[in-house]
Length: 275
Image 1 (spheres, rainbow, N blue to C red):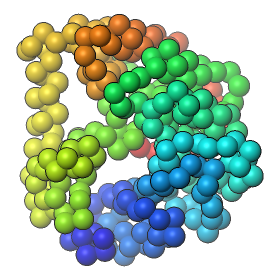
Image 2: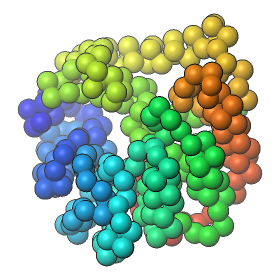
Image 3: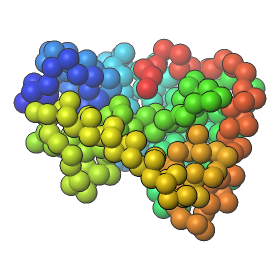
Image 4: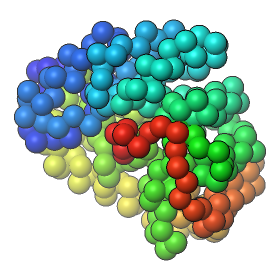
C-alpha cells in the first residue's frame, strides 16, 4: 500500500484497509507521501456491534463499511466513543439496514445506506429519505440523503453517488498494483481504464464515460430519460422495466421533499468529514 501511495503526489486519497488496527497507520502514510487524506475506508466484515472503537482514532476521517448494525444493545455500549469520532457508518441496502441506519442516526451516529444491489425496498427507502431530510427531531446526518439536501439545486443534477465514493468525476478506484477503474464494482470485475502512472488520462476517460453514459439514455429514449426524478437518480438505480414504478416514484417524491426542505439541526455530525 505504501509503495503505491508514494507513486502519487498532491492527490486526495481515500485509503482502504480491512483491519481496524491499520487505521492510524494508514492515516499517517498519506500526508507523509505528499498527498491529502480524504478518509480511511475500513472494510469491516463483522456487524458494527462487534467493532472495538478506539478513542485514539480521534479526528481521523473514517468510513466504516459494515454488513449490518448487529444488536443494538451492543452498539449502545460503545456509542459514546462512536459519536466522538470523525466517523461515518456505511451499511448496504437491505430492509434490516434501512431500520439500522435510522436507529444509528437517532442516537447521533452519522451513517449512510448504500442503495445498490439487485432488489430495493422503495417504500422503505422513501420512509428513510423523508426521515433524513424532513424529520423535526434532531438526528445525525443520513447519507446519501444529507448529500442530496446539501447539494440540491432546482435546475441541476445531483451526483449523489459521491456520498459513498461512487462518482467517476471525483473518484478512481485503484487496485494494489495501481490499475484504475471507474467504480468499486468495475475494479472487482477487473474492468480497468488506466493506471496510477497516467491518472490524469484515466480521470479524463472516466469523465468521458460518465458523459456518454448519460447521453446514451436520451439517445436511446430510455425510460429514465422521461422520469420526473431523473435529475436526482440519473439512471443510477435502473433495475429494468419491472422496477420503473418504484424507482420513478421514489425519485419523484425525493425531488418534492427536497423542494420542501428547510434547514434543521442535527444531534451530531457537523464536525464530520464530508463528501
